[in-house]
Image 1 (cartoon, rainbow, N blue to C red):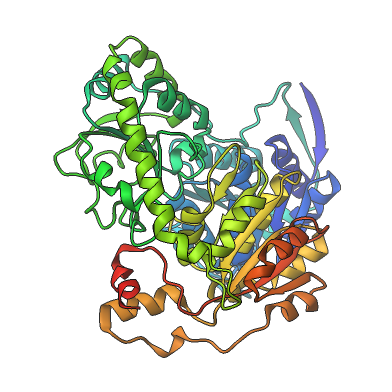
Image 2: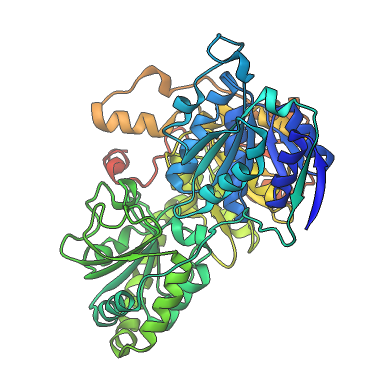
Length: 571
């Protein structure tokens, strides 16, 4: 053991560093803590607005498996953290938020920007705690990381009163040898009992048409290899949710691909709907069985037998009665592989060729269905599908691919292939607009050696385009493509389907996003010629620095969402 003599802000910085914190996503508040962190090498990623900062933090977590820290001032700044923490909670990613609090002697006096932060964060935080005495600093910070990373990961909030952290008095603290770093997740890994695993293995081995439906829990647990081994060694087709994309290589002969509400016309898995609907044993992994992932609970068959692996016991059986396998996805899949080895899997080997042929034929039908779009070389408004085909060809094997919510997520899920070590990041917990660029920035901060491509719509990008200045100022290099069609697309199409009309917000005036980029000294490229797609992408991916591609696209570019099939057919 050893001792250190530190003031309270320094103590906070010290325990953050002990837990592996490298960055604060912040805007200099609380200042005493920010400065103390800077003194020991914890860098501040200075966002332009708090909501974007919280999105960056989640992107960092999704890319690295490390717990990020976002900071904010009390009052209005704190309120802007709520959307980001809500997304993190719903999508099960840990974030530690450090929020400034008024002096304790000023409480209940209407101090400047005083607000009830406990009430504010009650719906979006797993644990909210005020550090009201200095003796609790180390204990509460460690507790915050533990709660954030334990069980189903999620956000926590530490409230830091000014009087505690502006106090310059120094205290002697004891530093234990081999202190535990609590800054990575999952913090604890556990698996179900051998009896339950054996029961699941028997169901899978004897199924007529088995299906694995992998969700985001596979990705966040790092269970990619474990899942791929089961797919290959036991001959079971695998589909993914949007958040689960990247957990399997979609070039594999038994990869179905992303399924759910976007199996509509031109959807990449449209012709595999029959396989999904006729599956008799379905293994759900880290899967919330939510509305979009099940096409409003109409896609997965009612008469199938379900097995569900999840870290959160309350998710199992939420919508489908299941054999309950409560545990970490990676560890449980590894254990399941062991138990499957003891089963007679001859049936799985016998059916492999049949399933491969079914998947192969479905892929061919999809290619035929979209050939008119992909092969169009006419110099007219660009279809996003055509643009992304070229993106897919130019991406590196380890590229990080990010989407904003709404149609951007649908396009990336369908038209960029998960292969090799590509990593996909989507904001699908609550699926709010504006997450794309900040998520990409957070991912780049965490994995600076990997290239990042981000697709956003002009609606969502309008929420956060100020963060281009952050990219320039801090050297966060990403390529962001803005679908510039002057339309709030998903809203317009959904309203048209539901009401046969749409509201006036759905159509925008034209914005030249290259000028926004250039105003921030970021390279902007306008792309309005289908024959220039390859050249523009090559230039963007090889440029040193961030690049904005202003994709002048077709204003009527309907995504493959099932409820919108009628709009495509009516064209």
